[in-house]
Image (cartoon, rainbow, N blue to C red; front, side, top):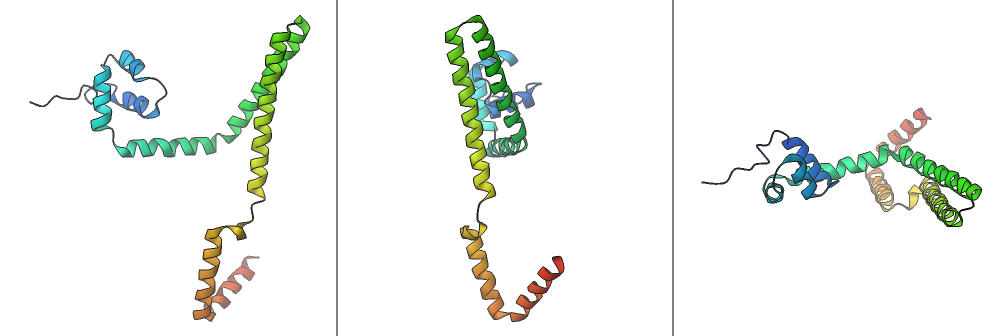
Length: 163
């Protein structure tokens, strides 16, 4: 008789699956939290978690990263401010080791902020006409217009009416 999956029948299977997919905690911690065995978690992962779940996790992470861009920036600025606050207290207390650590942390935050700013400027200044997909699209559109000159006229009229 085949073995039944103790994870699939667990009352908190959805939470277990979420934790397995997100990889935030170790399998041992998941096993301890939910009172299941490490081996059962591995079998469940290998036999019952689908590729769709992994893909969904990746898509959710990408969406979260995009949506939390401001949060990342805010967190970075908060960390910089905290590091500078610690530096100020260390200077008052004359603790050179803490001063140096605070300077390094603040510098790292400022460097990451600078890198992010440069990348954003690169994105803003990106010339779409150099994009290979745009070039392919423009060439295809030119071929269509050669074959159907009335389509080009119609397209031009649409552009003028939108302006």
